[in-house]
Length: 112
Image (cartoon, rainbow, N blue to C red; front, side, top):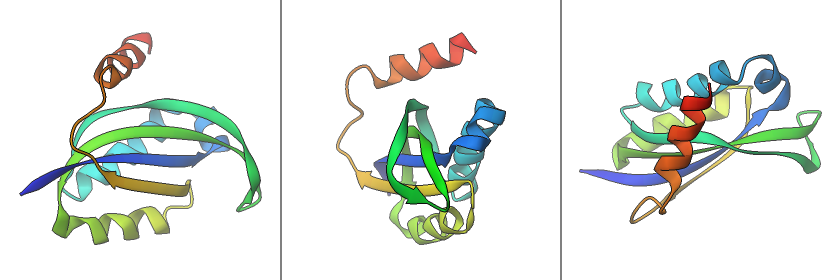
């Protein structure tokens, strides 16, 4: 049985500035590798960090909604822990995708 999750991923700004599409694909590919079906993913915001993380003072947040079986979560967490381009992440179980999220992700895809 699959469950819907919201994932917030804090990405290394140097990776994002080099190529946003590649940075986004890195996260969605890791999700797919672990059996997740990505429903939508988009850039949320770039922010100055409250404290340095791995020597970085700024980061870009990627917001993703995906469906995955609970048994696959541990392997996926391990993959994100080992990837140096992902500074932090948080995954929460949600009942539904908030209104407007799919449209915002589609707009980002259309903008290039």
